[in-house]
Length: 309
Length: 234
Image (cartoon, rainbow over all chains, first blue to last red; front, top):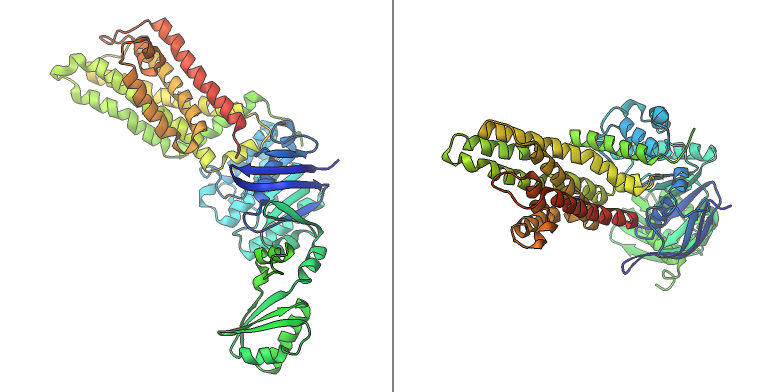
């Protein structure tokens, strides 16, 4: 049986579309829900958590509607996207009450909470009030509230947002460890490399629809088939442009103030050749990046809109 | 790990306990205490004055006004903020019936409002006229607090952002309508509370009938709240 089954599932907020006609099966493992802001990730997450009811179609978790069926929610752990919690409580009090409300008997709730807090690396701060927590600490506390009752399905909505790189790596490790323990985990993000660090299985969602689903490398290949832009900010953009002008994978070169913008069909090769040209011609590079790392641009390519530009 | 769907009573108790804890650490309780002291200060100021003879009914009406503000301040704010801040998602994603969340909040907040009002009324009477109030006036205020709390809960679930303001407006309208000598007065909290209390010279209506009317109003609004909470999405 599928953990999550969505059949022609749509959700509107008045006239605004949340998700549209989504049919999807989740069978297990860690799955990344990838899409730009406003794509419908949180809507899908909330529907799986039983917070929203489909406007049309059906969505079930372990064969039951999470909105209607109270019992199935004991198998779900949900960490919402927003930061606000019951800030007056300490982390331990918050996680304990959440464990109790998720069905852990009162006698064992505190122990379960302490174990969850330890799992997310917050033991030192568990007696402090949530009000004074940093973003990273809040994310960890939310994760603890989601795992304290040992759910089978974990729904983590943007768990890495606003977290510093060190904490991010730590949280990624802890989520992966939960996955290795057999939990089914859905993690949403609008940042491709965050998802890449967690899993190879992704669902790409854009404008309320599931655009692609499967292995992240297949999706990457799909992305790489489309022209990829690289911007080099340097002291001698003309020299870089000259060095790469003859390359057959470069389809376009545009000189900009303080830099050069390249369009290539083979990003890996292009990065190598940029490095070689910069070294050979002694160019000082101040920044190197791809505007296509912005998911919106990548998705426009995937939906064909980028190709029409 | 044992994982059962928590029982309704256990859920109500857990919500009640956490609501108390949050209330004790927040500002609402202090604001409620200050509000409760206003009629006390009024009574103390009037002590010994020529107008003291009319102090008891005026003080009672003052307490009734405080009921109209304090109950929504606790209940509508607690429910409305939970929905507006989206912290309600933590509760609704748990395997607990939503009605138990509403009852847990009411079970936590109504007694607090009651205690503050009872203290205010007792202290006001002691300071103003030198003796405590009649027992039935406590019962009337208690019934009023409970009824306004349910109105506040219903309105906060219908319009989370403006639940408190709407309840206060509702109660101002209620107080106005309660003075219209027609059968419509039975539909108001203010009239029924006055009828139960029978504070001289505010001797209106019949206490038993008013108790029934008050129960009808409270249960009606509780029903609206329970209907709404089942359908609300976060």
